[in-house]
Image (tube, rainbow, N blue to C red; front, top):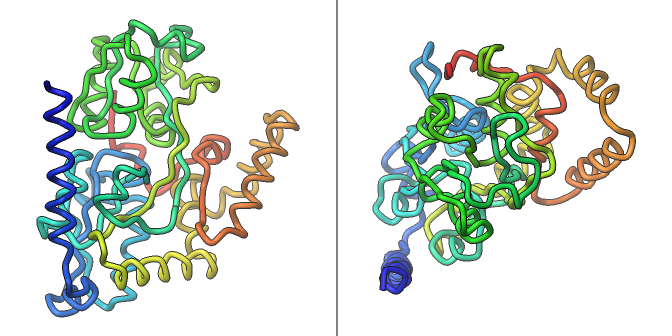
Length: 318
């Protein structure tokens, strides 16, 4: 019965959102009201997170949407949303655009229109060192995730015997792990890696992200209201210009590699440690991505380069 109710609720939401698709274009509305409202998350470093020193949300996605607002010629207004609120925020008029580590899925594509892919992520796990090494090891375990994410859905489907604890944001998820209330948490690899790097030395050595456990490969896209083709084309145009001009590479480099000045040394370090076959595979994937219309970045590149920039190391303490 509960499952039937969920299916019916999803169907009704889809119908309501489809009927609510605006006839007028968002681009014109944004220019008229004088600002671009973007739904972002505040606990997913380095994509978007609250910088305690600045008191502002910063990160890769913030830099990308700032470029979109600049192209329109209006100020940027950031609106914090949870993972579970991302879809509803658009038809309810709370935001004009969502850039919130939003994985593109067929189900979601019936509710919103997605932009080009700007990041390829992998769903991974963060666990006590040695606790698990394969997907089968997750069976029967208590695993904390963020509510309303594809991570939650994937775990329930692929490891049905696990006990999935769904919380409001990744800070709360990591808190459970830090307090020892769970041995495993799951989420997008780039964010888990960010939290692990912020762990104090005494705790950092006790946890790991097992390389052989990947629950899913997922592509991030920005979302606009369903049917809002004019605004979608505009967003895609800005993203493409950022890629072609090299600005997108600068943004990702700043946050994932510790800044442009760190590129060469970090790359040498990565290559020195990497297996030749692994390095060749990653390089081929990277080169291929540069020729695609969708510009894409693999989360494992960030880990390999060993530097995380933008001054966000103090964002969270275990």
